[in-house]
Amino acid sequence: MLGCEKHGKYVPYRDPDLVEGTRTQKTECPFRLKGRPMKNGTDRDWRLKVMEGAHNHEPARSLLGHNFVGRLNSEEKEQVEKMSKSWVLPRKMLLTLKENNPLNLTTISQIYGACKRLRKSLRGSLTEMQHLLKKLDGDKYVHFERHELGSEVIRDVFWAHPNAIKLFNTFPYVVIMDCTYKTNKYKIPLLEIVGLTSTDKTYSIAFYYIVNEGTDDYVWALECMKSLLADQAMLPKVIVTDRDLALLSAAKQSLPNTSHLLCLWHINKCVLAKCKLYVGTDDFAELVMGKWGEVVDAATVEEFEVQWMQLFNMCKDKYSNFTSYCSTTWLVHKEKFAKAWTNHVMHFGTTTSNRAEGAHASLKKMLRDCKGDLATSWDASHSLTCNRHTEILASFERSIHRIDHIFMCPFYTNIRGFVSNKCLQLLDAEHIRMKSYGRCDCLLRETHELPCGCELAGYERISYEAIYPFWKRLSWEHVPEPVADTISNHICGMNHGDMQPEVEALTHYFSSLDTGGQSMVRRKLQLLFINCSYFYVNQSYFRK
Image (cartoon, rainbow, N blue to C red; front, side, top):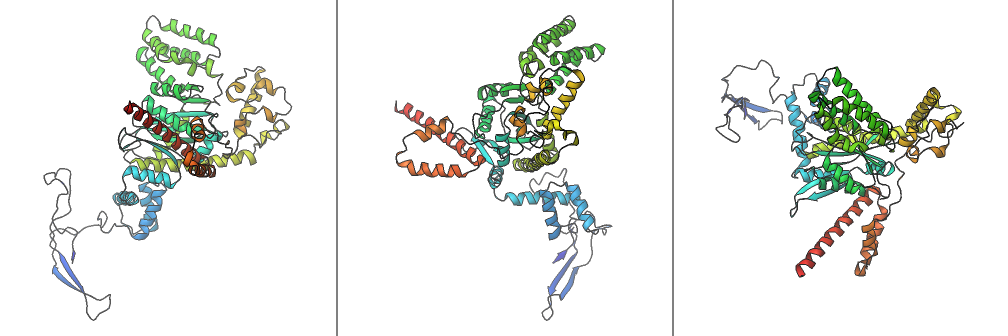
């Protein structure tokens, strides 16, 4: 039986009384044809009978917009599937289909529908969280989950790419942490932890769906991040964040020996907003902001105090609210952003969270909207992570095999091809500055651990030993040997009894894993030990 697409009557899907905002093409058109294969004919011979030959509507002027004729064939569905996995925009998918077939009548809504059905078919009968965990296991991610107290509901998910763990073990010196929002339809914040390489490239260390941005949540994230390091003695030297009090408290607990810097860009933005509110937007406001810049850029503590007193005296009569805001909100953390203190921290030029902000922007550009599920956000982060790793590997090779002509002089003979191009550029800029001004503030040695101007003046050729190891690492295979932590020593040092074969098998399995696998096993053993200790304490309490 063949009928018109307007045949039949519209049946509401859910609420029969809900008609506002709904549309239908059904007009109960009576047109019908009946086909039947002929008994003595071939497969292509059919007998067609007109049951009702009249329509109750005008004929269509164009076939565009009619779903039946715009359906995708099997080849086009395969093309859409490949382009969807490559994060091609739906409108570009449609253009590609029409370039391949000028007679194609598919519309953009049908492309969106095809992409939605594809995502649904990939997930199958799994829940969104099960689908996410399946993807993490499929790509050999190291991931940790935290459940709601007393239930099987997963509360937080922390994951790291295997190659990102290698990079983190190679370049653990500087860590930038920042949350981004509007990445999923559940409005769950996504915490991204990033680092930097010797070639000045940004890489993502780990991601974390953080439901509540509390101190204990950040502590858990930092502990998971620390477990990724094979050598617990190689903790980050510097951590850069915004002024999140919960994150400040968590970093103080988990990384007490790490220098904590606040994003200078965010601070200046907040101070400017308060200046416009309390002072105004006239010439005096510009003078105030210029003086604030001098306060931040002061080279010494004494100069900092002098510049701040000048700013305070400028505003104390009419704009005391502004100076009170600066004093109570920011100057209590002056050691974390003012150059009088940060110039003595080895931060490799990272005093803002712009690297994390740039990573957020790339992720949101790929996502296009905030209506996806958790797995969709993971897909985007996975694609970006793989692309970044490719670029980082290429930057390593360029530093080894492609040297700029200005570095071909004898001055760089000992380090050329053995350090990153970024290192060479910093040294060249410092050498030129020393020749121009003739004085050295040793800033490059303090912040980048590279020979400063006064050191370079004493070299005929720069010594290889004068370069900090960070700048010499041009591969992520530089992973230190794993060392057992306190809990692991406690587990391995106890009386095994009948568990000796299991312990030996676990030790053999642990040694066969790569760094990422070892980090995950170590973390699982820690959690097991903590849970067992908690159970033992409760049992003792109940016995009493």
